[in-house]
Image 1 (tube, one colour):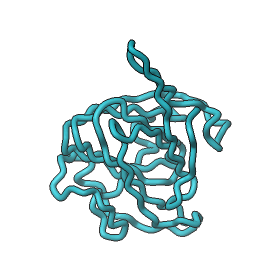
Image 2 (cartoon, one colour; image 1 turned 90 degrees about the vertical axis):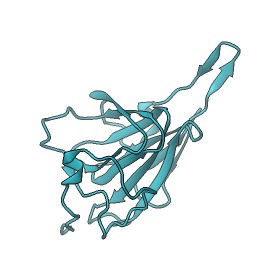
Image 3 (cartoon, helix red, strand yellow; image 1 turned 120 degrees about the vertical axis):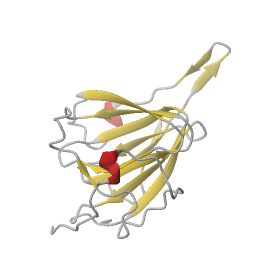
Length: 175
């Protein structure tokens, strides 16, 4: 059974330590169970896959109506999180977590926590969400190198999409 622990840095973020089972044929691992998370009423609506070359940075993104659950199926990434919820006890806290081949974990990202990742190798990220993609109506962005959030991505010249390169700086909201 997986071990689920809340982040000590950002309230409401959960890290799932997955338990693989191996035998001469290969491996099996349960990567997600709805019951593992505190927001038990959420329904899995959509599953997505992102394939990235080493050096690609995707983010920062955030939603007001969607939770994410991430699992790296291949390769390694450095996930970056920023708590931008003004009413949160961990408001403005940031955290990076390496995920993938040498750290097989799942990552539960609640509504209002900005998130992104940099691919440390060629990587495949799968993510489960509780709301349909709606042509960007609930998809917001913050520039990856925002000086207020000051995330340590471990890279200085990532490969960015035009959209992520033009994300605005962080603008604090009132609670």
